[in-house]
Image (cartoon, rainbow, N blue to C red; front, side, top):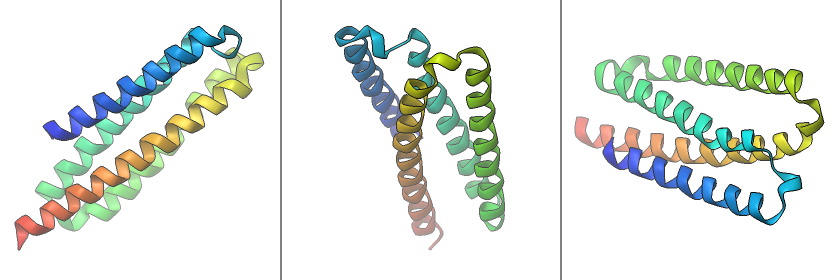
Length: 127
């Protein structure tokens, strides 16, 4: 769990640094609210990892059903966040979508990779 948290914080710091550079280079393509995107995805990724980790340790037979339910909830939450942003700030929608979808892809790949590592290490521990 500690290594996951370190990697997650490093990924978030790198993304925030890249966003800061983009904001300094051209402020027309950046809003301050965009800094919340990596923080949002880091929190969601951490929450999902903790839930899946608890399921793998306590009840591995229910892993797939709980994982799918968590993925569905995550998707609904992302859609709600998108609609809330659209409602309050329609003129920055294209830029927000670029940052949001980019962060989603980065954190999704990171999260899946870490979950595969977790599942493999749990399988080795059970043998």
